[in-house]
Image 1: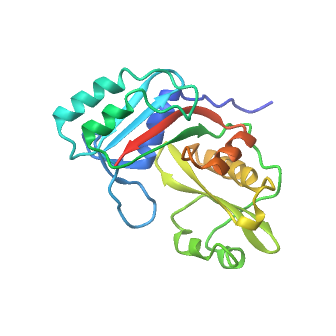
Image 2: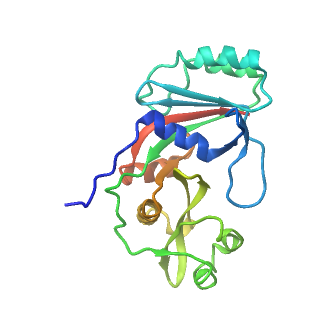
Image 3: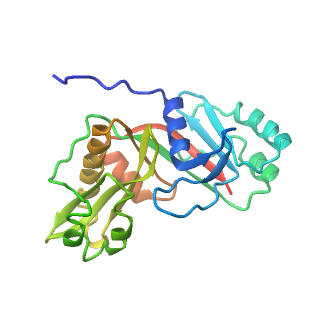
Length: 239
């Protein structure tokens, strides 16, 4: 028996956690920048739409989007149907792009890593103390970020990290996963193992572990399927 059962937030609440992890907000809940834990502040997209499996939709706007335009977009967001297939585009995608005069959009599924997810292989936590030992040979670029992207969990083969999952968007409520596996070590189940290990580490500090990707990232979606992640919605942004 578990000592406790996790109270799973609603899909709408998870989408709130998601957007707040992705972007910084001002006091009016307008988007400001991409919420990266390491130094540097790239501008947030002008429009975020989160459609959920419950049939609700959450929308956020960058601080410089005019109020008149926001009012029009909010009405369209309220008319979005329940999302079942994460490849289905928003009902009003053409209107969003036209009203915003958007140049490009992104879209992708959002998942909660369930409490039941456990690593099927041995994984290790990467910190400043052991990073020089295991990040050489493919993950050297992570050394400069290691203090910011915690928890950071790796699967080690041949004395080096070959698959890593770390926190790349962090709030007081949730962490978003960043997953990387060296090309020659893909397809072996390593990614699912580090995602599960990372999720356990995130829960140990009292946060919810979230995993999202892009519609075109089929490899990342396969990891989500293998890991039996809990699908709660689809995000959509216009830059």
